[in-house]
Image (tube, rainbow, N blue to C red; front, side):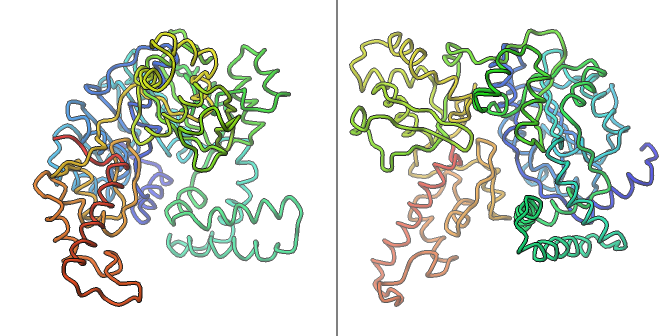
Length: 531
C-alpha cells in the first residue's frame, strides 16, 4: 500500500482502538438515491443489478445489508481500519455472500482501474480526513462514478460548527496529554460536565448553548465522541465551498438527501419569498444553511450535463410509493371523523399541512392506515374510489393534485417517497420467514437491519424468536423456544398478585400470546418476507 503520513497512521490506530458503530443509514441506500434522481428528472441505473461502492465502510453495517437484499448487485467496500474490515469479512463468510468484497485499504490506494460504479457512498469520512484525501475522494467520484450514476457524501458544515467547535477545542485542549483513547473519551465527557455544571446558574445564550450541547453529547456513544470531537481531523466547510470543490472536479450537485432540507416554503415567509425569486441554487442552499445554522449535510452528486429540476411538480407523484411519517393534532382520529372534525393539521418538526376537504382527509387517513408499508399513488387513488363518491381514478388524481398536493407534502417531509415498494410482507404466515440477515443479527445483538434499511431495536421475545423465523417453525414451536429461554417477566407469567402462574394451559396461552404480539411487531418493522 502507499506510504501514509504520520497523521493517517494515527487515524488508522484510533479507529482500530475505538471502533465506530457500523449501522445502516437509510439516506445512503441506492433505492433512496435512485428515487431522488428520478424525482429530479434523471435516469439512474436500476438498483437490482448495480455496482455499488462504499468509501469508509467500517465493518459493513451499511453495505452488507444491501448485498443481502440485492443478490444480483455487485458491491465493494473499503476502510482504513483492519479491525473493522475483519469483522465485516466474518459476517460475509457467515452469511455466505458472494456478491460483496470488503478490503482493508487506504483511500489513497483506490484508482481509476477499479472500474465504474453506479452508486458511490461516502458517509462520515469527508470532513474527518486531510485536504489531500478529500481531494482524492472527489477524484474517485469523478473517475469511477458511472455516466448516469449517483453519489452520496456527508460532511460537517458551517455555520453550525462555528459554535460546536468551541466544545471540540475545549475537549482536545483538556485531553491533549492523554494517549489512551478510552481515557481520553472519559476525560472529554468529564470536561463537558465540569463546565456545564459551572454554568448552571448562568442564563446567557452562551451558557444555554453549552448546556444543550453537553446534554446532547451525553447521549452519544463513546465512538462518536472519539471520532467527532476528539479526532485528529474535523474540517467543516460552507456549502458554497463544497460546491466549488465539486466544480473543480467536474462534478455537479444534485440535491440534499433529505427533501425537506431543500424545500424553501418551510422557511419563514420573509425568507421563502426572497428565495423563490432566486435562480442560483448555491445562493438558495447557502442561505438556508445560515437560516438554520446547519452543521451537517448529506449531499447527492452526479456528473454535469443532465437538466436538474429541483422544484416539486404535482403530477410526478404518480410514479412513486408513499409512506406516511407525520403526526396529526386529532388524537384517535378515525375514518368516521372525516368531514366532521373541521380542519386536521398533519405536521412534523419543520412543517405542517392543514387539510379541510373530506376527500383529502380520506387520502391522509388511508396513508396513516397503510404507513407500515409504502403504498403506490395509484393504489391510494383506488382505495379512495372504494371509500368515496368518486367513480374513477382520474378524477381522484385531479382532486389530489389540485387540493392536497402530496408532492409538496413529500418535500415538507410529511410523506416519504420511494420508487420501490419495499420487499417485505405484513402478513404473518403459519410458518413465518424473516430475512436471513436479521435472523443472523438477532443472534449477536439487540439491533437488526430491516428491509427498509433501518435499524430496529428488539425486545427480549423478538430477539429470541427471530433467529427461528426460517419458514420451519409454527407459533407453538416458537412458544416452546421462548419459554425455554426467557424469564417469567419477559413472558408475562405472573398473575395480578405478582405470583408465578401454575396453570399449565394458562401459561401456554400467555407464552403463545407473547409470541404472537412479537410477530405482529416484527411484521410492522419490515422484517418478514414472502417464501
